[in-house]
Structures are given as structure tokens and as C-alpha cells.
Image (tube, rainbow over all chains, first blue to last red; front, top):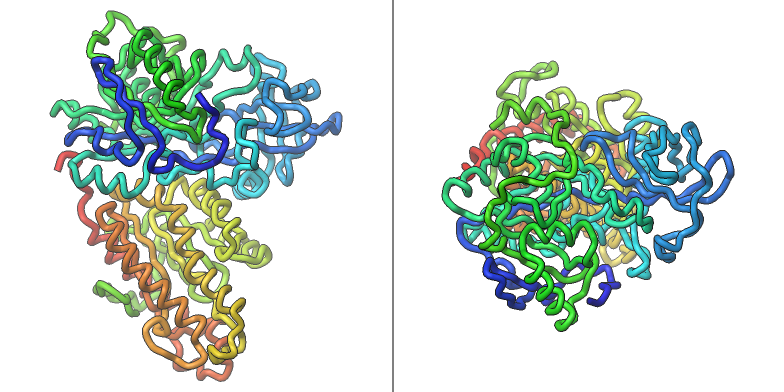
Length: 370
Length: 261
């Protein structure tokens, strides 16, 4: 595949590879997406806007230049504390795996990030993966992030990204650290044409985290825990679709992660509320809610690619890879798309494989609203 | 109070200053509202009025000292420094609004630019002055509304509301000599509002254009320095009327579509 190196969000002729439930592959373009859906389908997208989560500045104790990439938060309302990956001098123009190490980080270190001031609270099982806490009022922190932060960016896009390059057309609460880029395929005209065809549209808000850190040990931990919120309107759309045999179409991996996380807790029921997704999905995961996914094209070995293995078997994925290469699909966040229906032979497994626990705290809403 | 399209009945205003209204019939309780141009005139009066009605309010203005002064007086309001006429400011403003309020239900595009000061005949108007009026009065509301549309659509799906008010003027409809830059830009905003309201109605988002009438505000004083202020409407009255109009639209919103209608 070719790296998409221009910050252009899915033009109408962007490619979409479709693999149906029998593994038959066809090629479409983005403007035909609504035609791949059926009346009665429910399309669910992640409406998180993307924070400019790259903060350049100085490590107070040594004066060394650093870049802090905010990577996660404990809840969608959290303004003060973030997990973060720290890089040494330089910026996105250097590949993440080639970036110099930051100075040694110890709890209590002060970080000066533009007008933002932060303290290292503790290390998170890795020398440059830390919990930081910003100083100041909520107003000052929001203003500091909005004015000083830059979008997290990788070297395959050579020109600096503007914030609007990273926001989807449906972007709402600014809680993601990287764009929920599958939604770059959506526009308001498509939503209107879906609505005209009795295809319902709902959103969740999921704080999508980093997709890559440049460190094998850290990348192996991806995706980090991510908070998400399922509004009641989306939950009720899903409930109705389930009752009337409509399909649930996830726009992006974050939507799959959120809906399946909730369904695992509530025995196949999507209850509204805010929770923290902790699980990883892969070949042995049983999908209880989502019937198809629209996603970017992903590289073998990445956590996003692993999640696609929950939809289609490895033989089909291998053929998809060949087709993507043969037809010059573009990859990364501004690249082309795949639309994968859950394989018809993906018989419910006897067990779900969760790599982590699902026993986190729920909001009161989640247990009372149905 | 004139709504320039789809007139909406106004709810009679209370003759007394309203105490914080927690009545279940008050649609503003806990509603998330953003107001541009919020440190003087109608904008400041709206910040006060909507805080009094129980809304969670963010306000935007260009000058930091003005934002800090209002923030000091009204600590419950979230002040944001930004210039809606600058493209580069729109996303930082949007991020602070949606971040601080956790979404948005009502956006009031109130910030306006008169064009050349003192007012001039169009033939004497510099393109740059006209451009500034269009940037503030047309592109600003367009860009800010567009950037907040995801939040507003989400609010509509949740049955919370989703109303955008573009503050208009009778100069949008009438050809007043020397009001060319302002009047033409407000006319563009009025038409933008009407078209967008048509387009977004199926998303459950209303775009209203509201003319608050001639008010006793710093902007009016700048435009008409020798006006008899006793004939002008106090901005507090205009704010109350505008809030009533939005309340009427909110309370009339369709019951949230049943998921399986």
C-alpha cells in the first residue's frame, strides 16, 4: 500500500474495498458508501473531536527540549490528568522510532509546555510513558491546549497538520488524541442520503488514543484504556435494530471496541452510559453487536489490523491485503477504506478472549438507564 | 423582536427581574449555551440572562481584559478569548466551548462588525473594511456553526435542543444609506440562516435569524453617536426577548424521534 501523505479527508473517489460475509471482494468508491448499506441498518460513528495533543516544551530539571504526546485519560470529563508518551528533541518530521530519548523522567519533574505547566505524577511501567497533571484552572488548561497544542502527526505527512485536518465532519467533544479517522469518510450529504433510505445514524464519543509510539514495548500495549460514552439514543437504535434484524455498522475500530466492551458486560445488551474500554479484540473475539465495519486500511501486526481479524478469517484478510496492494490503496489516517461484513462462518465462539478485566467503575447512568 | 423567517410567537416577558429559574418548564436549565461578542451590549446581557435562567454559559470575545473582567463578575460563565473573524481562531474557540461545556445545545452568533467607522457611503468604503464586516458577520458565524455542528447534531439526537441564533438587523432587509458593509453582510447572514435552516431541519437543528431591534449598546452609539437613547431598547430587554424566543423554539421542538419511528 501507499502512504497517504496529504491531509485530505477521503475525497468522493477515495477507494473502498468491500468484503461481504462470504469473503467476496469488490471495489467501490466513497461516494457509493450509502449504497452498500441496507434499510434498517444502524450506522454508528465516533463523534470525538481530536485534541491538539502534541505539546512541545522543556523538561524543567534539565532544560532539555521535549515533545509530550497526550495518550489517554481516565474519563471523558478529565481535564487535569493525562497519560502521555514523551519524546526528546525534534518533531513529527523524524520517524517516531528514530526520535531521541527524552531526559530521565522522575515523579515531581516540572514540564513547561508553552503556557501550560505540568508535573510528572508517576511513571507508567515504562521510562517515557508517564502520568502528568496540569496546573491551573480548567479554563486555563483548555485555553493552553487549544492555543499551544498541535495535532499529533507522523512523518508520512510532511507538512504540518492544522487542527481542522484532524476533525471529522461530525466532530463534537474534543476528547480524542488521534482522529477517529474512519469517520473522514462521512459527510452531511451522505448522512442525509442514508436517512432518506431508512438507514439510521447514531454516535458514541470515544477518546481514541495513540496509534503508534515508535517503541516496540509500548506499541505492544496498544490500544491503551479508552473512556467512551454511549448516549441513550444510540443505545435505543441498536436495541431496535437487534429486535428487527437490522445490522449494526461500526464506523471505525473505536466504535467496535466500545460497543463490544459494553455488550460483554451486559450480556449482549448495549446499555447507555460512560465506561472505560480495556479489552483488545482479535481473531478469537466473538462479536456480539457489530455486523460490519468501515475502517481505514491497516498494516499487519497493528492493533487495528488485529481487530479486523474478529470480522474475517486470515485467508480472507490475506486476499484483502493482496487486493489492496494490487489496486494501489493508500494507507494511514488520510488513506482509503475497507468495508468488512462479519464472516458468515464466524460462528459464536464458546468463549470470549479478553486480555484484560472488564470490572471498571460505571457511572450511575449506566446502571439505571436502559 | 423580529425573527426574519418562520416567525415564532414570543412568550410574554416577566415584568420582574427573573430569579434563577429552576422551573421544569424552563428549557434553559443545564442547557449548554455559547455566545459570541459576550463582553458588551446584547452579548453581555445574554450571558447574564441565560445564567439567570440556569444555563451553562460560555462566552467569546476578542479582548482578554474584557473576558477577564466579565469572568470576574460572572464566575459561573466560561470566558474564551478569540476573534471569530479569524479562521485560525475558530477551532481553538470551538474546542474550548465543546470541551468546557461537554457539548453544545445553543449557539448565539452575536459578535458583529459595523464596517467603516464612521459609517460611509459604499462608494467611499474601503474593500478591507467591507471584508472585515463580512469576515465577522458572515464567515465567523458560518465557520463557528460548521465546527460545532457535530456537537449540535448530537444534542438534537439526544432530544436536548440544538438551536443556532444568528443576530440580525433591520439593515439586513432595508437599504439604509451608509450602512452598506454592515447591511450587505447581515443580508448575507440572513440568507445563509434561511438556507441552512432548511438543510438542517432533518437533523433536528434550527438556525434562526433574530433581529433584536435598535438597542442602547456601545455598537449603536458608535454607529449613531447623536441618537436619542431614550428611544432605544435596553439590551437587557432585548436579551430577555431573545431568550424567550429561543425558549419557545426549544419547547416546541419535536419530541425526540423514536429510535424506531
